[in-house]
Image 1 (cartoon, rainbow, N blue to C red):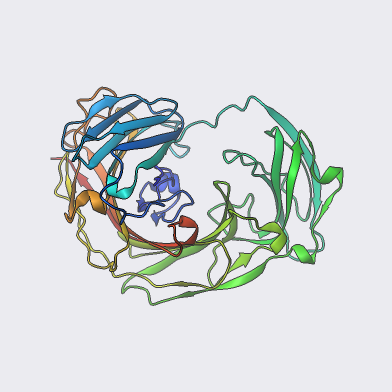
Image 2: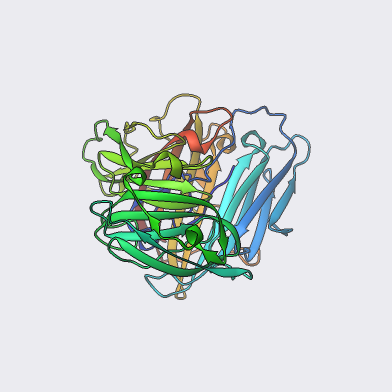
Length: 440
């Protein structure tokens, strides 16, 4: 099982950090979302591992059973938790020091707590964002592309997916582009993408649709793409389309839009924003084993949000049916609030996950704190209480009296379409609420 922290990394429920994620949105069904079957036997191993990728966290702590949190140490980015006989529940907490948020220019810090049991599996992961690592072995990839045979193209880009942490775009142009940029040395997969876009580069705002794509494997860096020959996109490289249909919106809700992406080696390649009634389907030569389509729709009435994300390895019709509204006015204002996550809108024996989040500013630092809990951890309960771990050196101090706190809470159901469970064939539905209160 894995989960992804803030800045649109979390996949268990909702992202409420509008300054970082653009708008109030349920971010569900990421490529690395939960993949363990929560129905596995209670005879799961008593050794649990938790891997933290990205920038190393500044501090890590664990809680075994109902014991207090105690500081822990990562070894090569991995934490090993030994559960005594008869103990199945555990929690992992860690703090990330992020780069300044681009919207504020101020420093930020993030604290994440993950609560689960051995019924959820024995291997978990999270991550800390930060500056991209400085690659010690890079070279220059050069080339040119020509999409004059594809009508409507206004922007072209080149994506090197040989390393999941590297995005590389060619120079913006109309339908002819030359490019030269740094990429990780070695043999890489390269996608040449042509968009009909009203802005550049493709992103989560505006309007853009992938019109054509050509795929190249085993491209050497440093070197020239396609052996130095121009990449000429022809009608055989054009995308086709698959339909998207919708059930009735909940009363008072309006659509916040649907997006379509391609997940490639941990990266997200934009296919269409918005993708209202259809999404682009890649030609057969451009899709490979391990790639997945990710189609997400969001609806909101302001403070209440619902999101549905479908991931599929083979393109086809996508139908969205919205769940019942989850109305929640929030916790009683407190520095360690208790969230009520009672909701009867999901049915069936499917995976459920819960998230509660806080954001506040103290001393010029923007603090983000998140608690994640699985249904197995709650064990039939309907509340999540924020644990105070400020006594452990390195963790965030609780907000003081008078502080305004932005809160959010979300519940996610995952239905897997394949066995073993895989997020590449799953429907992830989330309901969430958000608000603001002042600490008494």
